[in-house]
Image (cartoon, rainbow, N blue to C red):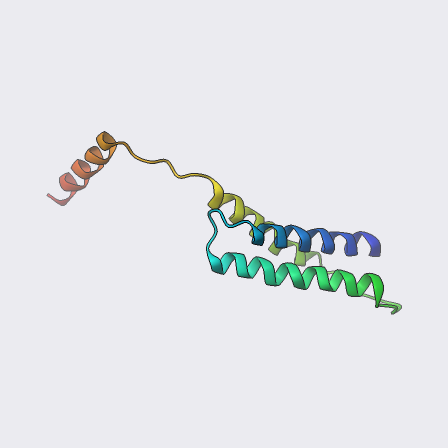
Length: 101
């Protein structure tokens, strides 16, 4: 179980760092958060794999909620938004003007 936990931490860290390196669609804040937490996850996995020699440890599976949320945010911001045609823009403006009256 310990090896699975360390492996999942490492994969999560690598995935978040990879998402941080891609510039398309993300804000700089989102990229910074991805990089910081990815580095923390990868560093902790390295610590557990190579330095830790204790008898007991705690496994926090809640820690894997953050990488999932960051991945959802990453893919949500990468999907292109539909551009409206001139006719659609005019129709929306007409609907807004009708609601005001």
